[in-house]
Length: 335
Ligand SMILES: Cc1cc2nc3c(=O)[nH]c(=O)nc-3n(C[C@H](O)[C@H](O)[C@H](O)COP(=O)(O)OP(=O)(O)OC[C@H]3O[C@@H](n4cnc5c(N)ncnc54)[C@H](O)[C@@H]3O)c2cc1C
Image (cartoon, rainbow, N blue to C red; front, top):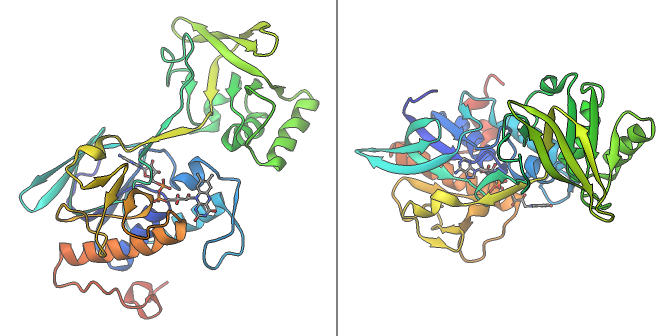
């Protein structure tokens, strides 16, 4: 883990944090971005990757996951330290620097931009015997590497985009997939649902509506699960190796609430420079409030630009707040 002091650290890899990281790169300062999720994109990738977004400037229509991909491409064209799967828990001040305390260690920074959206996303859990016991040792909230499921018998749970995307993608990798959802209404994109239904009709996947997990069994590792039809209460025993619980995320502002920031509900009050009541700490995106605030991707972009450029000036008072125009910026001369 890199514990070098950087000029700007951004908490949150959603659209606001990614756009902020781009600005930090354009300004030529050292930057770090930390997100608790294993993938960049924030709500765009975690909550609605297959939905079309119609109100982002320059894109009459763009899939949320494609917007996230373009933002990542723009944000990562400059050197930056990107720390995924890492949750920021604490913040303390040490002389002229801030120190972020994370579940992986300490990250020092001159300034901080909090772009934490609705807070850290925690995977939703199912309340049933065995679920917590096998958490991350057989019960998985994400797919990091599809190869981890090669020739495995998988019970996949969920009715959203992530569940259907992975059901489709893993059908040729896993030995078997039983995909269950608690109702017959899916939140996933119609096209992916039809692909999975087609695979189910060919016997490549078993797709069951109105089914829930009742228990997960095993000792050293998972050996089986009991699923239940919630209409008939009929139970069925499955022999499985893994449970993929792709049932969404719950955001939680969590420890950020204890850092001494001026809060309004679950949002942080900022001034017109996007500065919080704590020196060197800025914030932008869904997590902030001010008179007239709108929780939109486009407002997050503008706030990120204001927050990061003011942070750059705070870290180095000789640097101007105004970044100038990208059209004539030296940062792009060789690009
Ligand atoms: C279904 C749906 C549809 C939407 N449609 C639109 C639309 O059409 N147009 C529009 O403009 N907006 C839309 N929105 C809203 C838009 O997605 C949000 O305004 C936007 O994602 C906010 O971006 P953000 O970067 O501020 O926060 P987020 O996207 O929430 O990203 C914040 C990131 O911070 C991370 N994080 C938080 N706390 C910590 C911590 N302590 N440690 C490490 N990481 C942390 C989180 O894991 C997350 O990845 C929609 C939202 C939803 C749910």
